[in-house]
Structure formats: C-alpha cells, structure tokens
Image (cartoon, rainbow, N blue to C red; front, side, top):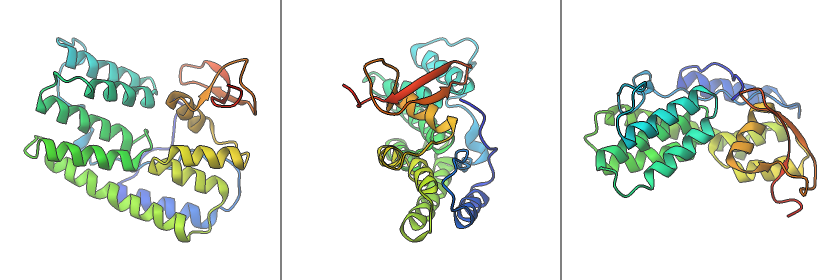
Length: 232
C-alpha cells in the first residue's frame, strides 16, 4: 500500500484526529487518518520465528502475512489470517497468536478499530495466560479509548463529509463509509481506494457502471475501478 502518515503514540494520535476534525471542514481528500500504534512491545510478529525459513503450515501462513504487510497489502494480510483462523486443526495457542496478529494489523494500517477490539477480546478469552496477554490488554484499552473518541466526533463533531468518511473507515464501518463516499461523490485518497479494492468493494470490469476511480497499487500497478455492485 502507498505510504501513509507516520504513527504517533496512541494518546497523541487521538488528539491529532480530534484537532484535525475540529479545524478542517473542507471536502478535499485527506490522507488516511493517522492510526494509533499498538504498544511498542506488541510490534513483534506472533509467534517469534525465523520468517525466512518457515517450517510448518502455521509458520508459512505467518510468513505470507508478513510478506503481504511488507508489500503494503495489509487488507490481504488480514484476509490470510482470517483464512488461517478457519483451520480447525489450529491449537489454542496458534489461534491466540493469529488473533493477536490480526488485531495488530486491524488496529494499525488495516483501519478497523472495532475489529481489533473484537480480536483481542477473543484472544484473551481463549488464552488469558498468553505471553502477549498484557500487551493485548493494553492495546485493547487504547483501542476502546480511540473508539469512544471517534464515536463522540461522529455524534457531536462538525465534520465535513470527507472527515466523516475517514472516521467511519477508521472505526471499521467500511460499508457505511463506502455508502457515504458514493452518495456524496467523494474522492478519497489513493490509500483508501486501495483498501476498498483489497476488501472487495471496488472492482475492475467492463460490465460495471458508475463512476471510475483511478488507483495505483503499492507495486505501482494502475487500475481503473468501479463499485462492484453497479452493473451486475
């Protein structure tokens, strides 16, 4: 995915979001709102393993996730973890590892605060004595605080349509954000459009109708995309 703004500590990140929304009332597209970084200790890929030489199915899956994230394809990495979590042969510890990893991605560049909270709830219920349990609780508390702040902004803030789109997107309300984008004829920044493409909301296809969005993927591939449901 294309470069985004650098992370700040979670508390400062929330203050920055509040300040930005209080001052910017235009509908001009912004870069994705700066995501709060999970606790520093939580940045280590789970589980700690030699990612250059995956030795089993679980390790190979995490290697794929790391490769996708490194290439800027966070949504594809999240999808791979979701697929992995559907494997009934995973041990309890492996399920907890995968949930923690998905929560990291969702709370970071994956822009899904609600999803991260849900993953951390499930992880801690499943394996409360996990090696990363303390970091998971800290990340969850920070995510809950951000969710409260963002919802307050939606309810009481004087947000432009673009700012409302970005706030919904950050929370993980991607369908609501897309509906607002389409109904208001917004043009989000490339990073948001790439996310929507990777999530399956925007597609390529001569049979599709409606407005086109010009997108450049992290690897430089240029695409002309339309909403997947128009013209089917």
